[in-house]
Image (cartoon, rainbow, N blue to C red; front, side, top):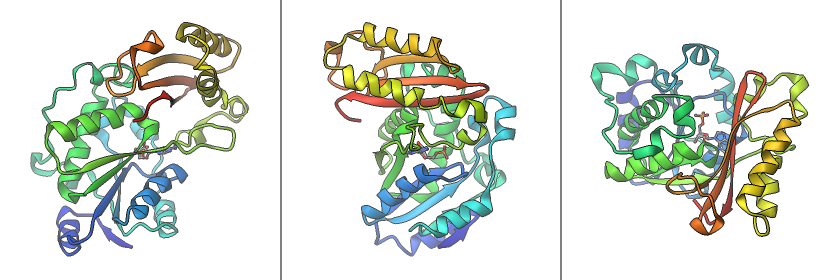
Length: 282
Ligand code: AMP
């Protein structure tokens, strides 16, 4: 595995492998099996695989959240050593944002930017677009692998790539879960041990909806989910059925051929998100 901290270093290196397809997996570190699955997908497609680790300050609207974000570089390097990653790029802030090289891309996201996660985290997706546009410019990948776990991020980046005519194909990858169904996340380690046993509720409710989607209407399914949370220690923030491509709320099953259920809930002071496709695909 090769390591680079500077734009020039990685650009020069990748210039030498231009004959190969380049697959890119951007992360903020604290790597787990979810990240590994994106690397595996890139390798499966025969790509020369680049992973980046950068805790991007511009996508945190809460400085305390940025402060608390786990930074585990040594462990991450060990983890990557056990994967088939070819290159790790781990720039610092000065390198990423030097000389005003990373403007926020001017793209029209309509309501996509301010709904759901955007409502809870104002400015978050501007920061995400800013850092991903900069990374794509540096790495110039053929494929960008992103987790379906962050569905809104995927939809927004797909739109950004299209609007900016960036020659990279974005590939959605399935959500990797703990044995009890909880989606893997670097935040899971912060869940109070007393609450952990109830953490199957997010996936449990999504699975309930998926299983009963054919025969029950959406109002009924939503009411069931709300009730289950009222009887749990987890606090529901939102639960919605959305059109997978536009992220507009869907009230009737007949409104769209591709419907996804999205959920955000609190385990104490830890906020968790998850989603599951009901019909169609990403
Ligand atoms: P992060 O380091 O949290 O910014 O995540 C980096 C990438 O890993 C994003 O594309 C995430 O959607 C993806 N990812 C995070 N958790 C999971 C998971 N449990 N399953 C699949 N992909 C994930």
